[in-house]
Image (cartoon, rainbow, N blue to C red; front, side):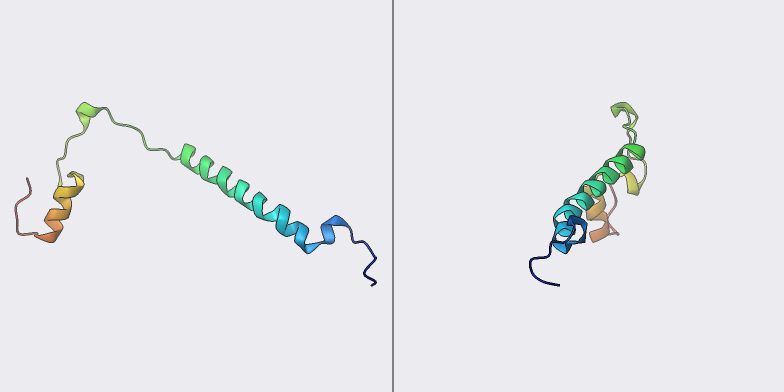
Amino acid sequence: MSSNTKKSWWREPMMWLVVGGPLVVVVAGLTTVWIALRSADTVLPRHEVQATTAAELPAMNGRNHVADPNKALK
């Protein structure tokens, strides 16, 4: 094949990198949006949120409890 022979655009490997890279990113972004919208957590009203177990305590209390489990939780 001589260097003057032109290939079709779909047979150029660089064209697939130029088009394929952004196309994969767009598809991944749309998939992420779809997953986020489909499985969004419901927002609880403020008055119904009460910490009743150690798993539901604020992060600082939970962290302190893990650091020193013998200490009573507030």
